[in-house]
Length: 276
Image: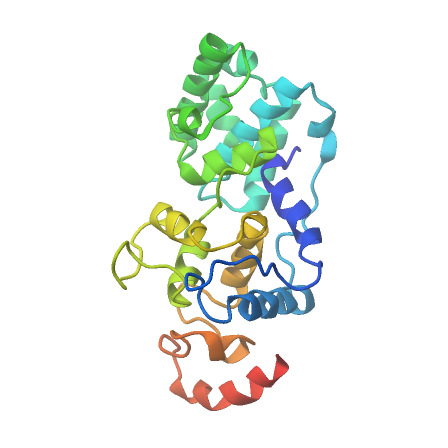
């Protein structure tokens, strides 16, 4: 299987080992202690868990011709939306084994065949339909290649901002923005790192979070912040009942212990924060 949609995560994880974080910040715009928070999360991720980076993946896609590789990146990224990694890997592998990871092959294939091969990815019927439409567009407008800009990618059915930025990074090696999913959106709001324009209110949508985050986060952090916060969001800063008592950066978080099921966890906060 290609697993191309997670190549970003594997590459960026290795860059996280560099010394601390960038100091190229804009005075007065960046939140306090953001570097300590990212450093602390990075230490927890390396020591306690590594849910994304330890996954097996196949580099076969790197041996494809550039045009085919980029289409495979787009298809795999589309399948990954609202779908667990192992499910995406399996679906992408099956498409590859059946010769259905090029625009021409997808355009000629029966939609029912695509549905069966990608099941059980989230919204598999809709994604099968979108893959057919995308393949047709890529053949008609890009000679079987994929769009090379965020604006054009966003015109493809089923492709939103997160997928567009992911495809630009993996397909074109062009970092145009931060990949913001629900984990990044939730954590940045809990940390108080983002807010709605001209207000202190939380951002409502991931795209709003992306714009707000990019206003101050140094560009060299735009790629690694996604896998860092996704891993953190899955294991520690979960949507419901976040594990604040296990979090080494809770002292920097204005939302710490507000959503925990047991307020007695607060008593552990001071001791745990001594890890930093």
